[in-house]
Length: 297
Image 1 (tube, rainbow, N blue to C red):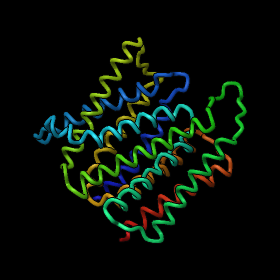
Image 2 (image 1 turned 90 degrees about the horizontal axis):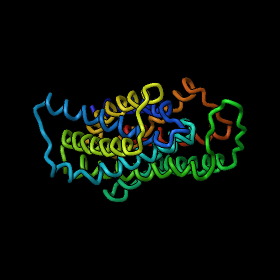
Image 3 (image 1 turned 90 degrees about the vertical axis):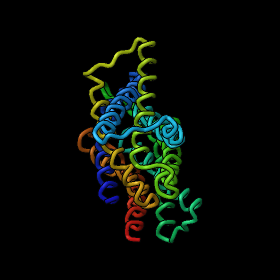
Image 4 (image 1 turned 180 degrees about the vertical axis):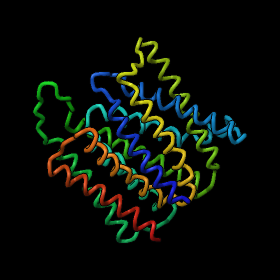
């Protein structure tokens, strides 16, 4: 069942990325904070509903135990929300989801699972693709037309998805230890702990917006709510997938950037040059190679 859960997470998170981008307004400096509010409250509602439906509860001690994992996940997601204000989804998503390579490397090192030739080649392809995409972004000349949305290209913008990649990779690695390698926590406890922790962050973010006299506007912020629904549904299936075989699931789920790129091209009409497409193709190919070769083991 872990494979089915991983595929569902992949599709749902690809859809979440699309609506994250639709709800990301560059001119709104509080756009990323508003996204934290939306995701936090939707996840919190799902956690409460799940506990009531299944007659279970999670102690504060359990939430604290899972805090290291939650911290890395939430921090990476906040960085991802901020980065979407400055980069096309079809650029940021493949870079961010190279975190599967980071996780795989860490799992190989710390649980003594030595990579084979195909796994090593996959990781190298991903890293080269990330490097080339960064170089192309820094060199790209942006011609702004009247009424066209402005993106900030260059090293600073690229740092957001790269930071997401590393931090999320560490979080997924810790999740693999908690849920799979050492079974430190159950799937239910992990899911609820993460979602309730995100709820706390959502409440803090809402208080911050109120102090700054900022309001959620349906016309521009409804996409954040839809993204939160997709994100929460994907998180539900992801936790159960990770408890199966983390070293396989991590790179496999990371390939949801393929759906993100497809959605961004179809629905957001994002346009890239040939060099960028080649770099993105390299990253997605490397991720797909990791997922396929691991699933055949």
